[in-house]
Image: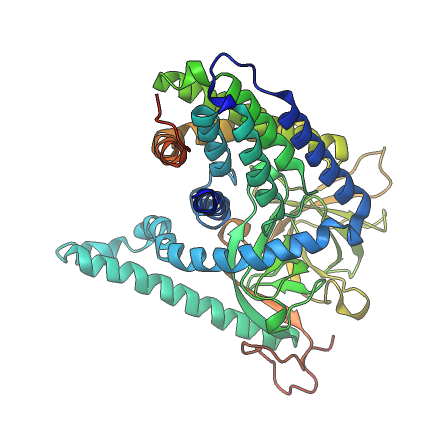
Length: 170
Length: 302
């Protein structure tokens, strides 16, 4: 059963990462695509809490870092999504009850995730991106993630609840 | 389970461990450069994700026609008026045939550019794009080492230079676009043969413009001047004579010794589809290589 759960989670993360690079570029806003992996991590945080979400965030981030056509220093998205998973998990008891709180959580997570990634790039100089461009990309990323939340988040949360071991969702 | 308890504070151990793991990977990859220990993992991930991306790209390709349908509507207004009485099925057929025709035109263009430049090309499709959130401009193409694609090969399409291969897996390859900030291409102005360095600006809102720093500060490029590649030693990573773009404006400041020209690339980087990878003429792979004329002479620089 544990193996089946791991398999489903692997498939979900793979699907999110692949759709992000292969499907969404056709409907991108100035090159910015919705971060599906981040939505999966937030859903994991809201259903299962910070530890589980941080692990999922690490795995999903690593998948983004390594799947082609990624060419940045590996580990940067992993770091960003670990932070996102942990922070989103800390607020889950407020966020899992109301839709508005969930949307705010996604917006905050998207802001934190994209910012951490951009900051790590600035620290490493990989590449040196002007602050102006960073500031224009982050709001678009947040907006797009929020736009996709009603379609992805409930679905992901339902799936993750069904994968929860030995416990009825409350 | 402990983590189910809503009053328990989450353990910091897991977080610390994962953060440490992330920092370790970042350090290993940043320090290692070309032969970083992450590189084998990356190519293994490429072997796994590449085919999945390929399948996904094939599945979603028909939906690519949707935005194209909207853009061509204006141009085809007359035809659309005539077809207004036709049913939705017929209109859908029209849309897909339009895409096929555009694709056939692109292939024709690729054949022509092979004949023009005298290079042998491996045709391939763009199957994935790097997101702008990652601040790098890279794409995945569906040809890899099994088709003879290797790192440091020139990638072009029927409009002009696209980029170079940075990593090749068995069935896919990653291409660094010339508009990426890390990309530097040697360029030569068509009118006076002056050389310069072309840098990507990675910009999103600037329609992917490029900056050209001329080596000779006394030379003033003119707007409308065409820029071609200068060519590297042995054609790696860039072969000579591939059209890149046109000069749109020129900047000079007393602070800088050389003049800077803004180049508008010929290739449309937001709508990349069919591209060609310049390969040696004797390449044997699992897909046909477009050769110009005699295979014995093709692939060599003119």
